[in-house]
Amino acid sequence: MEEKGTMENGVAAMAACYQGFDPAAYLQYNYTPPRADFERKDSIVPWKLACLHRAFTEGDVNGELLVDIGSGPTLYQVLSGCEVFNKVLLTDYLEVNRRELRGWFQDEGASSLDWTPYLQHVCELEGRRPSAWTEKAAKLRQVVKDIVPVDVHRPQPLSLDDLPSAGADCLVSCFCLESVSPDLAAFTRALGHIGRLLRAGGHLLLIGALGESYYFGGPGVKIPVVPLNEAQVCASLKESGYTLIRLEVYTLPQDMRVGVDDVSGVFFAKAIKE
Image (cartoon, rainbow, N blue to C red; front, side, top):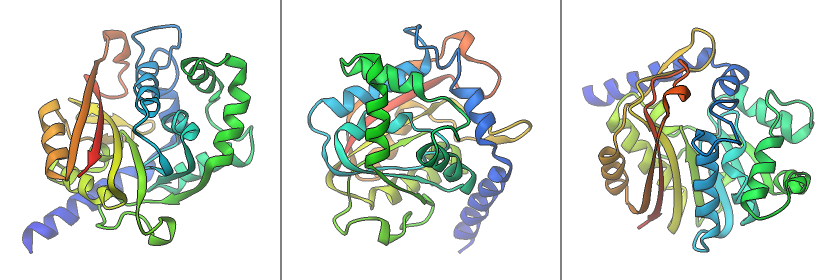
């Protein structure tokens, strides 16, 4: 029982860290240049978008429902997936993030970040002209069916009303699990919890930080992160019932280390639920 209590205390402490999370500041720190410089081949955001584009266009990731676990205040992670799935569900633990997302979906001007360059870039990846971004924005608004609460530390992270009984066909999750878990064991457990939302044979597309021990979720809001390495990511996936298809790693150039975290790299994993 002591171990369970310690685990719950760690999770509660993580939840407390997020009380001051500021979506607008977080977006400014991570989703503007140099980290989101679409002219640079070595910028982190274009790398992530390319990984997701490739995964969603290889032909094996498809179905009816895509669920994004821990969307935060961001949309980029479903810009390719919205072309493949008829329904997309966005999820986040924090109401401030769900409100930020709802602002973009319900009122085109009510977003803390202009997502137009992202939409244009993904259109280019898809071989379309950048001006097709308005069509992609309309498609995204059409297929995103809801923005709902999620808690990856619960054995059933979503309300059962939000999911078909067979489960989702694909999960995407970016920078969520390692940044809401008190330790590696909790990260691995969370991977197992979200796996229960996925049908057998469904895909998980996971992006996360390597070697990161903290990040700022707003001015003075320092949030601890589980520092992961590639071997730990692979072991946690295996332990949680996934078969790894591909792991790709990006190393941050020095000028991307802008003082809002101590991340050294980013991983992209494509896996399938056994």
